[in-house]
Structure formats: structure tokens, C-alpha cells
Length: 568
Ligand code: ADP
Image (cartoon, rainbow, N blue to C red; front, side):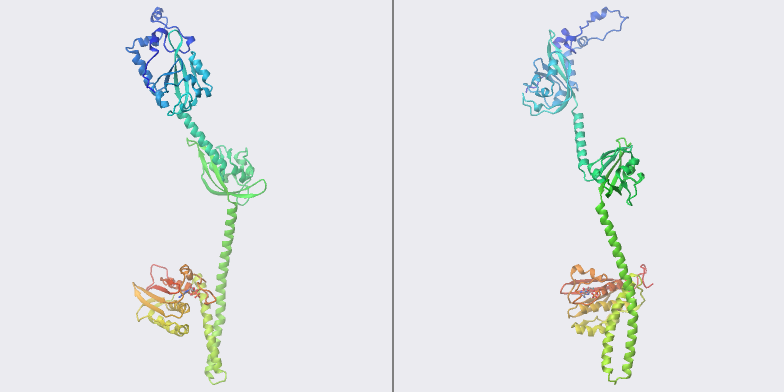
């Protein structure tokens, strides 16, 4: 396609036939300056000079018109009377991205034809000025020529004929109004509106939009399903009745509490809950978020509500709450029972113990009586059982004391070495029966301010467990002093503890062994840790299954003055 230079075909005719005409038939005769001059100067104001006369004053009219045409922001093209393109200006080429190919013929334009514009164009070529409606025009859709690289534009075209000598239409010029930007924006807006509409229609959440006057404008299908009704033509005060709105207790929902109404009044509402009674009588719980709507100028424009049906979720929450309350009651009942039972069990045990003492004394007074030797054996067994029973009841009592925050410490200076030696000594027979050897600590002076009975209980519990779960292997007990803390370790080489149970065993009634093989209530470690912590210390365990366990107690030598102390 050879670039066409700007020529001005009409210039030779300007002086002869007038310039651009509106309609060839209605051409006004050109007024000569002589004719104007013949009118009385004072009677009428001077008429404006004709374009031709004005151009005559310009040194180089061709250059002048060429500049006008070239720099006009309006896209122009000029066609010959047989429909071929003669000229385009830069604005035209910027709009289409190119000029028409040499074989393009506006009278054969298929796009114009498909839009029903051919007749209009022909009228222009017959001498009329015509303007087309706005159309989308894509040169790539032309079929009488092949155009592969041109812009699709939205244009309205004004065709105006240019006269040639003799009054015929010599050329037809087209001025284009380019509204591509506006139409594209409109198309985009329509597309967005379609998307939004689809979103609202398809949404699983109920979407309700009210305008500023409280008239519901959008009530999507999900909202219809939730309420069992379609959009109602009612004002805000009637929403409650029209849509069956209820509060969570089943009373009609007051307008001021209705989330959408609150949003219409400028409030942001999050996770509100209310109920709806559908026409079929079913009551559902909805949960939703509502927000005020504003115009682009920030004026109130209503509100939007997005709501979900949470009936099942609410049912489950109620059930969970009920179960948690039941559990709480059950735990309290158990603790109360433990507290009462342990106290009740203690008194007969005390009296049984006193009676055994009396019996022991009587046996001692008559050592040679025929029943004395067998009675002595029974008393001995009775003592052992009584001790075991007292220990169990003692544990239960301790648990209820700890639960009630009544664990009191009687602190006094205690040397841990002799205390541990004593416990080891007392457990030696039991360890021997289990086949384990107790290896006591080296002599070391570790003196701290502790509750003697409670620290003895700690050492006893750990040594008891080491014998019970120690699989008949040696048990090492060590003490040392480090950074103003006493460190006691009890190490066995027994069954060990699985990693997932390492923390659990310090809880109440938690055990990591079967009750069939090992007796116990699962309270010893719980009480031990509570006692150690009451002293401001810590208890931890390291263990490997089949290799053994090491329990480590760390106790500050002095109570930390900054912390509350159960002993004070
Ligand atoms: P009990 O010994 O009465 O079950 P404890 O509170 O003393 O209660 O111990 C809790 C659980 O911790 C035991 O049931 C046992 O599974 C585990 N356990 C405690 N000490 C040891 C140990 N030295 N070796 C292996 N397991 C132990």
C-alpha cells in the first residue's frame, strides 16, 4: 500500500464553484465582494467574508489547508466518486492503525452493508451530507479486501460530498467521531454487571440489598430458599412480618435489631444471628454480616446483607455446650465424691489401726498364749494391708486438697541426704522382693527449706514406682546441689514409657500400663509434681521403652520470695 501524500483535490475548484457544500442541491450562490460593497454601509452590518475570499488573502492556501487537514484531531478520509480512498489524515491513521488498502472501496463495504448503511452512503455519494449511527467497525471483517492489522473502533461517520466543476460530486469526505473508549468502558461495565449478577444469582449465601429508603432491591435465590418467600414489596417496618424474622428466643425481631436495617442506617454489622420462620412453619437460624452502601459521592445508598443458614451448626454448638456442662458437673461430682469418700474412709482406718495396736499390746502381754504366734502373723499382715489402704486413702485426700487449693507446706531446714537414705532403707526389703538393688546417693550435704513430710512423699513415690516398673534391675538414686537448687534423680532400667505418654502420666488418674499387670490409681506422679511445684521446683522424666526411666526433681533451696508460697 503506497502511502498517499496529502493533496487537496478540491483546491482548484474553490475559487470557481464554492468550497465544501452541505448539500449539492442547496448550494448558496457565492457572494462577491462587489455585491457586498453595493449595500449601504451603514444600513446593514458587513457580512462575513466567504471562505474562498478569506483563503484568497492567504499567501499559500494549499499549505494552509494541508496544515488544517494534517493537524485536525478529527479523523478524516476523502474518497473519489467511485468509492476509492484518496486521502486520510494522521488522526484517521492513528484511529485505525493504518490507512485503507488501495483496493478498498467504501461503496462495497460489507460491514456498512451488514449494518444497513449502504443506502445512506450512496445518498452521500449522490450529494447529501449524512451521518451514520454509532457502530462497531473492525476492518479485519471486510471480505472484498484482506486486512489483518487494523484497530476495531466504535465510530459514527459523517459523509459530506465535495463538489467538482459542473456541480457533480467529485469526492466524498468522511469525518469520524471515535467513541471506542466510551463504548469499551460501557462494554466493560456491562460485563462486570453481568458477572455481578451471576455471582448474586449463583451464591450459596443469601444476598439482600436494600436502598436508602428501606426498599429491598435484591433478594437472591439463596435468600429465597432461606426465607421460603420471594422478595416482598414492603417497607422496612414490615420486613419482620413479611420475611418471618425472629430473634434467637423466637420473638419477632425488632426493626432496630435487624442487621440489614442497621446497615441501611450506617452501621457495620458482623456475625449477627437471628432466626426466620418460613411459611411452612420451619424455623431456621441465620448468621450474617451487613454493611452500609454509599454512592461514589459517599451519600448513604442503603445496605447489603450476606447471610448463611447456621441451623445445624447452632444445634451442634448447643449440644457441645450441654455436653461440656454435663462433663463439668460430672467432674465436680467426682471430686466431691472423692473428697467425701476419702474423709469417710479415713476414720474407720484410724480406728482399725488403734484396735490393731491394742491387739499387738495384748499379744505382747501374753506371748506364750496358744493363739499368740498365729495372732502375731495376722496382726502383721493386717498392718501391711492397713498401710496400703491408708496410702491409697492418703493419695485421694491429697488430690482433693490440691483441687481445693489446700495443699499447705510446713517448711523447715531439711538435709536431703539423710532423708533419701532413710526412704531407701525403708524400701530395701520391698526392692529385694522385686529383685532390684537400690543404689543410694553418695554422702552430700544438700540442705533446703522444705516440708519434710511432703519431700519424703516425693522420694517415696519415685522410689516406689522405680521398684514397681523397674523390671528387677538396679535403681540409682542421686542427689546434688547446683545453682542454689537440689537435684534428685531416680533412675531405673525397667519397662520405660512410650513418648506419647510422657506428659500424660503427670495428670490425675492417668496411667500408661494395664491395670491387670500393675496395680495403682494413677495419682502418685500427679501428687508428686504438685508437691514439687508448690515448693517452686520442677519434675520431669526422660525415658526409653524397654531401657528405663529417669525422673528428675529440681528444688530451690529457699522459697522464692517473689512467688506466692503455699507455706506462707
Ligand atoms: P500409678 O503408679 O499408681 O499408676 P503414678 O501416677 O505413680 O500412678 O504413675 C502413672 C503412670 O506412669 C503409671 O501407671 C505408669 O504407667 C507410669 N510410670 C510411673 N513411673 C514409671 C517408671 N518408673 N517406669 C515406667 N513407667 C512409669
